[in-house]
Amino acid sequence: MNRLYCGRTIHHIVDCYSDILIRIALQNTKTLSDAEDIVQEVYIKLLKHQGDFKSEEHLKAWLIKTTYHRCNDFFRSSWFKKVVTINEYMEFLAPEEQIVMEEIFQLEGVDRTVIYLYYYEGYSIKEISSIIGKKENTISSRLQRARKKLKHILQEGSH
Image (cartoon, rainbow, N blue to C red):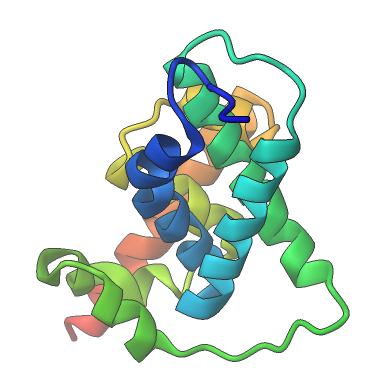
């Protein structure tokens, strides 16, 4: 049975969204192998998903939200080890993205996610609020604080 999601097969969805989902998972886990595992679990969850998606954007938001929540579950798991392999992450990124990634890694998990979704994926505060499940004011405050922290980190690095 080849089920369709917004007129797409699972193969098309994997081709279309794997990059963004792996980047989001990578922002949180900091290791490519863990990020890939999380994205694979998201796709398995999609295959088991019984509801219909209203649109392509609804599907995309569901995938991002599920990835974000799976990342949170990852950190609560009993086998989670706090190992940061930044070199592995940097190899995955385009050269222009590598410039501030080390500094972004110094931010807390939710701050990293908010910065990534806002600046790299172009989501609005309202959309991020929906994806993460926090109030818009909370996301706005986190974004402002994360910008200030990032600015401070970047200024310290240039001295």
